[in-house]
Length: 177
Image (cartoon, rainbow, N blue to C red):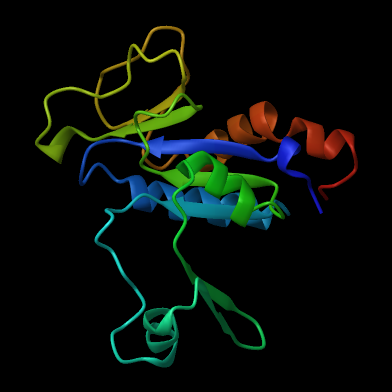
């Protein structure tokens, strides 16, 4: 198990309909095929609630339980109030993964890969001047200064960059295949 201190986070950012989720899927598939244990996080709004009214876990929480854990033979789901900053939650709940890919959180001071598409109806990328930008994925002619740029289908080279910059210490310690 990898400790919190060695966990890595990379944010996948971009405006709505830029292709963040598609890029996340492709990166997760590619990195997982390479033996990397990837955890994912999706930013959502506070009014989100997957615990459905009337279900047992919802009834437990409404009765006063501070947390409700749903358990099957192969999966768990946790419903719990947690007011800590998001980054702390990443490490707390995903401390057993090699890499955390988080979709959204564009204002965080963490490494970012931005997705920007020509037909996204947005005029300009978000993070070209952000010092935390580590790569740019696009189908346009826009190129950030001194940052690697990838096409929308360049999953393998992008995964190589992620491995080199964020997972090198794993192979050095023999934790990855």
